[in-house]
Image (tube, rainbow, N blue to C red; front, side, top):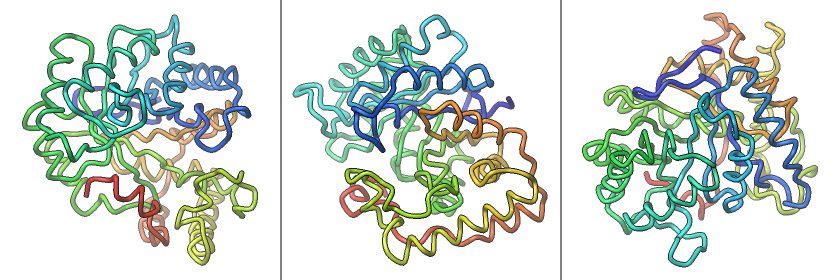
Length: 325
C-alpha cells in the first residue's frame, strides 16, 4: 500500500479505526472480540500500518483489543491513541487535559496496548479549562521520556492548532472529513499545509452512509446514536441518500463500491491525508483497503468535488458544543 506523511511520521494511506470494536454502533453483548482481532490482523496483512484507537472507546476496551491483536507484531505498526475524555482522578468519562491527567492517561494506554511507546498521541477534544500550552508541554515531556513519539490534536480550531504547535510540533490533526463533511477546506486544511501537519479524517464514510448499505434508519438499534443525528433524520436523510446515489453511480463506472469511491476521492487530496475508516469486520477492511488501487479520472474527481455536502449538522447540539471552533 502507498504511504502518507503525517509530519515526519509515515503511515499507510488507509488506516483502521478501532472505535466500533468497543461497541459504538452496537451493544457490548453483540461484540465479537475475536472477529475484531482477525480484522486487525487482516488489515496488517493487506498493508495497513496505522491503527487508531482511544482510551474512551469502551472505555478502555478498544485499546485492550488492539493490544491483544498487535502482540508480536508491534514493530510494524503505527499506534495512535487519544487522551483527554477520561478524568483519571475519578476514573469517569469527563474532559480533562491537564498535565497531571495526560501523564496518568499515558500509563494506562501503554499498559493496555502492551507497548513501551505510543507513536501518535492525540488530545481527543480540546479542554477549555486547561490552556492548550499546558497540554502540549505535557506531551512534550512524554516525548522527551520516549513514551510518545508524535503529538496530535483532534477537532481543534486554527487558533488552538497554532498555539499547540508553538509549544510542541503537531504531526497530525484528526477531524471529520469526507464527501459529506468538507468545512475544514476553508481554513483548517490550508493551515495544516502551512505548518506541515498531516490530516487524519475520521468517519470518512459518513458514519456508514457512504457505504451505500444504509437506506433506512429503521434497521438501527434503538440505542444507535445515529437515530438522533441530524443527518440521519427527516428530510436531511432523504437528501443525503441522493448524495450517496451519485457516489454509487460514479463508482459503477470504474467497478468500485460507494465506500471505495468515497475513500479514493479523499486520497486524491494529497499524500498528507490518511483516512481511518472504522470497522470490526474482515470483509469491510478488505473492501476499504482496496480503495488504495482505485483510480478516479479527472472528470470523476470534478463531479465528486461538485457534490453538495451533507444536509444537517454533523452532530447534535450537545456534541457540537464539544468541538473547538
